[in-house]
Image (tube, rainbow, N blue to C red; front, side, top):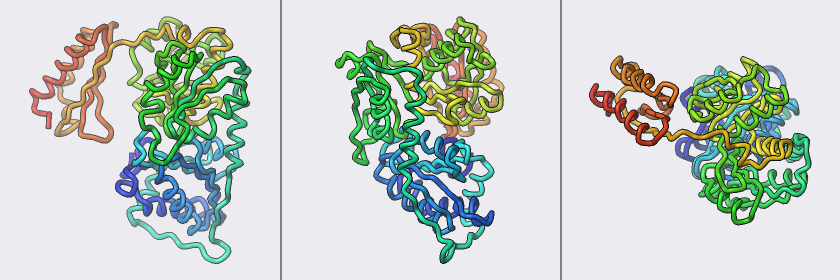
Length: 448
């Protein structure tokens, strides 16, 4: 990770950690890097979510791009996966999404995508960061070389058509609830489900610039749980602010997480001979119950660091077809290069219809183990993590748990924090083992 860009873009509170000048400079550099530097005019596609500040950042990015001679194609309010899809299918040099995903409305972010719709490579991002910090100069375009903006709502419409084409079945007669988080999916999701024949019920589809993710969407799924039960719906799907995540709610109001989705669709692929390498890609934060369920049906798995970036890298490197995170960021590499919440919900509908089973029955084999996670502020993350006594305490817990649970100790990527997590048969056991490791960290003087 660089100085400004993390695993999921440049994020910060609007006009504090991330301001319009940052956006102008990002546009300036990308417009030159993909255009004038190569003796051509760059084409860049831009999308945004519904935050108040997204409009400010959109115009700032466009100003920077045009000043460097690039043309900015504006998709307006749309989802991150739609920008990824259009970047790779419509011959763009790169794509930009303005969103802080599931964060509160006052935060925002700038996500950079390459021409394949993938997260931009680290080398290019570091060059962008250098320019933000004043390293290097870029000439301004002049006269006929100055760029322009192009209204590209047609790109969003083409993406909607692509989503509709992803379903093998009609959804006729199925009652579906959608929670759009007052975010980017509000203009897309209902239209897709209606076109596929579902009887669609929608909540949180009235964005006002300040209500994105507020007590709604995949991070506050209790509203959808209640809605599904009260309306007697067959299934519900909740998205986050930029709709690259999806969580489900079964007909009884129970939450179906990203881990459940990986199991349900992974098994569906295996049964049809489509699960290449017989593997599902997870992160280290997936629940132990997922691994037990996968073991029971003979599906193998990979574990990556936390972050969809690492999941995708593993999938591409090894040729795996499905991977994701417990948060609902699911990647189907046959259809997309990033997580896509609406696509994920379509795929879940496909399994329900093909197997003629309700969501509750599909998810039943994944039994979550109790989990306790505690954060410890430390003076030095590497010193605490690498302390021989701490490592010995972790190994002791792992040995005592055996096949009945697991322990994970990892560093926070953004804070001076060590995270200690244990999964076991009971919360009491989890608490005991987590505290035993933290006691050693404290005894060795690592706690701040």
